[in-house]
Length: 427
Image (cartoon, rainbow, N blue to C red; front, side, top):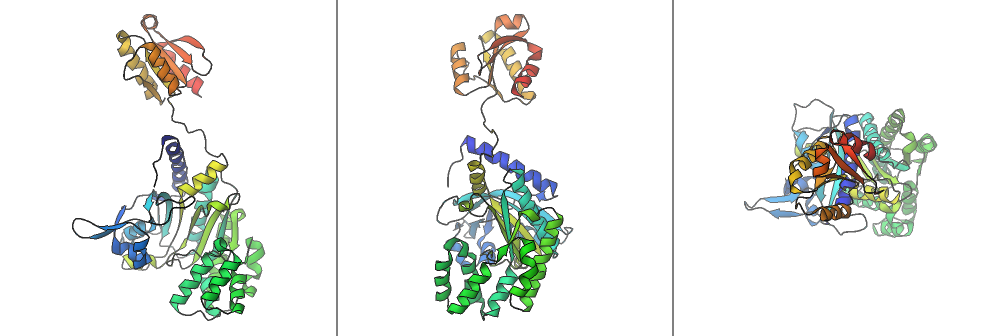
């Protein structure tokens, strides 16, 4: 965990505003789930083993509680029993999450996520909408050279069934191995598949399956003939095709790649899955990911409710944006510092300060009310863009003195025109 200093905080605020604008334009309602959940709620999603990966504790009443490790759990718990909400339910959130894992590159034990979920829609239109909103967020912050890699869990599970991977335990193990192939490389993956009990021939088939990737118009036409035939694979193909077709109508096909190596290791995913990458900085990892989780709401409520969603981490996205110089100038320096040349003009000094602030200018004065020279030194030290000097002579003439700290130029300005003159310079 780390402190967030002013420069980084300004960039985070800018990024959050961009994300909110996109979620707003797609008609997502914003909320925030509780940061603390019952431990059993967190375990219901990920199993008892999640205790090793999260922050959990007993409170003073002896209850087992845990800090949220993502936003999806709380959002799903919130809507699972809300029979009064009209479907589809489109909700989004931006908030911090805690994970007790090993800190590593672009990953912290406390980090910020943005999240968007759609509940109550079984059709692929919802998956396409979720993919589009994620892609739109990246476009809105300038990361236009991103790539969204899409697959379907039913394709992977159907393929593994075709090579006689039957038990749920073995299936989950194989899914985790396939999910990690992109990071570990072919040799390590082959060795891991072998240790999991697959013959050399089956290992090659799994590697070949995970290597299938490319533009949708290049991969989809031949995909049915390249895969084994069973009901699970047929269903996965229909879902993948339907999602791609709707993504096309939303204008995002150019950002999309089919990649059957995308699995998403979390076990609750059960349909279309995807991850997005900055093509010029894959070492950062996925900048967002998500997929369909139709069975999760049943864990927290009394009904099955189809759902699909996407989430991304601020830290990884910010790293990509910083590398490419895509952040705007977000410094928090004072724009106008108002200097008081003598205590007899305190009232007029504060009046000028208030006028500037009401107009939205980032303005300040020396609360220590030090001598003029010290005030000017302080204004320079905080990198104030302009200085307004309020003195007895100027006030008698209904004027103030305006100093441009970049050029050193000074001039008298009528007091009632100072707001307009400042606005001209700052624009």
